[in-house]
Image (tube, rainbow, N blue to C red; front, side, top):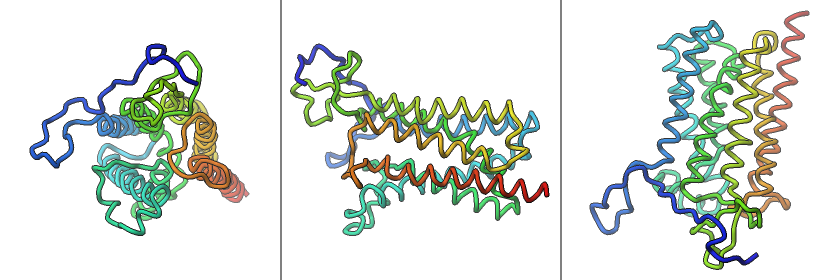
Length: 281
């Protein structure tokens, strides 16, 4: 698929909202990155949703408790995402150089690692506050999708994690892609991901959280639903995304890891139903 460079839009967005000159020649560029803003927007949206849930009686957490809960979740996302990236996508390099985990300025976060981090943070918070993790999990999944959405938009702005080659009219030329020079267009898979992994799960979870009594009748069920729905969206999007690491059993790593996430979601739904049934009996 070779085309004239003018036939498609060439990605020319800067990863910086504001860029500062490097103080030394061997330092990389500094400034305010869109990726950092995406995280900030995700955390702000999460706080707003939690506060709204408290005001409307759908959450037991007052503003002070929301800050405590958010602190646990932020640490879970950041630490889990970074450690997950190092283990799941940079395993060989991690063995040779364990310090890559600390070199966050080189980039690299894994959404599956972030999920594990959030899960651990939720269990930790539940134990710390002496509460059941199931209703906390249902509350947490109501605030996770916006962060995923903003993060994928930031991926697009950064011109990273591009899609496979395509002839569709809205294909994009990514300068960082190895075949950019010959005019090979690629799927804007980051936008697909923002929709499939962020927006659609957000709409679904918000509908289930506010318009049904699933969180009251069967705590933990909504958490399982979200994990399964996200996994389906991620697996689907990976069909259009260029793998950024070696395949596992013929699948991209995103697809492979999402299978386990989907299984975990189904198992959590089973546990939630079983626990509810035992309680009613």
